[in-house]
Length: 260
Image 1 (cartoon, rainbow, N blue to C red):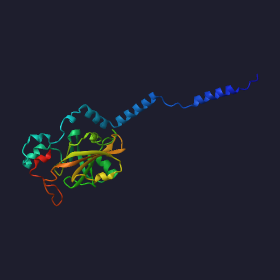
Image 2 (tube, rainbow, N blue to C red; image 1 turned 90 degrees about the horizontal axis):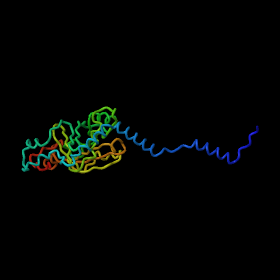
Image 3 (tube, helix red, strand yellow; image 1 turned 30 degrees about the horizontal axis):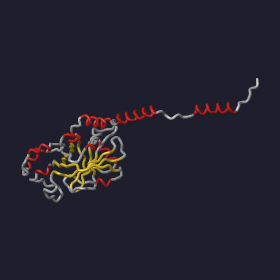
Image 4 (cartoon, rainbow, N blue to C red; image 1 turned 45 degrees about the vertical axis):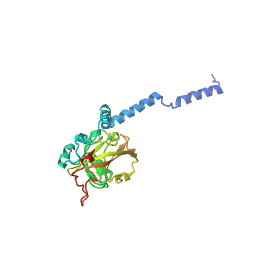
């Protein structure tokens, strides 16, 4: 039996059906949401240490209600003339070549004079935080520049993958303690800002005569930007003594009130 030719209407109908089969459907909102949740879970698991730090801080957010100054207990002292050996009782003991930030419970060893090249930086960040060689050392005029991880993959080596995960929680007035060559240095947070990854001028720029700058990647879990925290030295008081020939600070014998 001879088949009749297709009509124009039938051809259009067949063509439309074939195009519908081949048409690529955009994912529904449910699928988009599911993909987003999967992405978030993967990011959270791969940066577990940083996520845990954020959750812990949120759960125990009593730091905001307390004065985070390292030397807050010294407020009971009324006299401004106190022997230097008495002052030491109000500065918490920390290990030599360590940094302590009570407000975010950060405590880590410091590697001094690290070259600002990726191999040296990556290697030394496995063991704590690092002071970049182009910046000055504590006690000298200028900027002490220290950087540490805010996050890293859970399988990456090292115990300090999230030491600066809560750096953004610091506010003006919070204190940071360093110990270098068995001398204590205390800095008071002054400001925070976000900069691009290529703005290396933050390593040497100093707003204060003796300044500490902390840096970490931002947002946490990415390397898109850099979070910068600047702090001014308050102990030993920059104005209470004169520098020696090697520019090391002379410990002040009075002016205890400069500590708070």
